Image 1 (cartoon, rainbow, N blue to C red):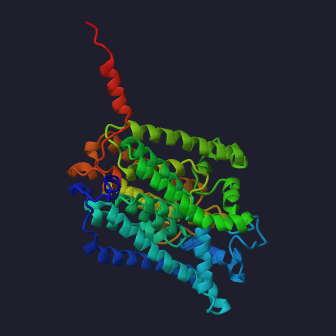
Image 2: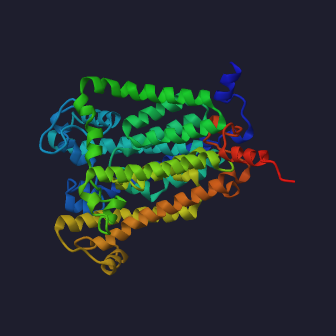
Image 3: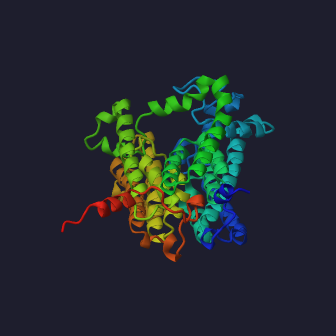
Length: 477
């Protein structure tokens, strides 16, 4: 083995690079995650027993895309995602990246032995089982990456209300698990494997593409050019491996995800939904302006994160930057679905494994989770909905507000999530600027998730460049 391979593969490990004893905790974390996933499945039962009737799903907060899309996207008729189109909507092909579509098709094949009337529910249940497996993978990978705090990190993810409530809304846990595995491979100093897993995650959902930014920036600061090259090559290779066949043989179906995303309007969960009622109504009807505002705001925030990555007094930990760039993408986005909390969950735990802010954020997510469904209940039932007093009275009686909630109460729920995520991001920024307050680094650890970045010397640092310029200025006599 060459010296370069030793540097990348981490044969010479220092104590701070060793990961926590995951093996003794794996059965506990697996069992608890499975239990939470079972509770999440039971939380959907009132709606499943009514074939996910929309009024039932919004009243009980147990909506899922999985069951209705089995029929609406033609899977029940034997249509193949991307290759076969369907009629009846403005969407003509499955509007998900190809690996998500492949999972949908796999489950559609698995439920073929069921009777025609039972296939829809079988499709949902088999998908839920696979998503539960992905949840276990995500928890174990996150625990591994956390190093000496593996049990704490694993428990925070496994026992989170967000996992229980949103695991089965959509297929997001596939990308979450692949991203967690990619981070685990990177922390184990396997950059090519990390890149391949990240490429597969991008093929399942768009958002993991954002993580290339933090990885590249931190590799530049640490001078880890070879590891960065292997990462990028692995990412591109794996993404092309699964996308290229569909691109070549089903171009129109493949591009549906991208054209659909570009043309979407304001989603209920976006901050723009609130702003359009407070002076920014023009963006609601102008998709190009909406895209410009969202993308422009993200680019400004991303530029700030890049400066932070290169100028912070100590190189930020990888999960800190990954969390911040994802928050920067989500806050000004025109779409913010309830299950997107799963994207943030492992990174939030790794970026800042402290309970108070984490619990506050989870409360904000729970408030929003029920807020969106009860607001949609009032919209679909065409009722005024309960005001804040009526909503609190119903909740304290452990009941849903009759007829849902009004828009004012929903705005409060939306802001509860927005503000708690923003506050958590601000605390992460503070930890970066004041490394002594970082809980992970309090015992002398550098970056358990960093892989080749862990304990690496800076090669490029704006702070060091600024200090050199100051010392080079002659002092007047």
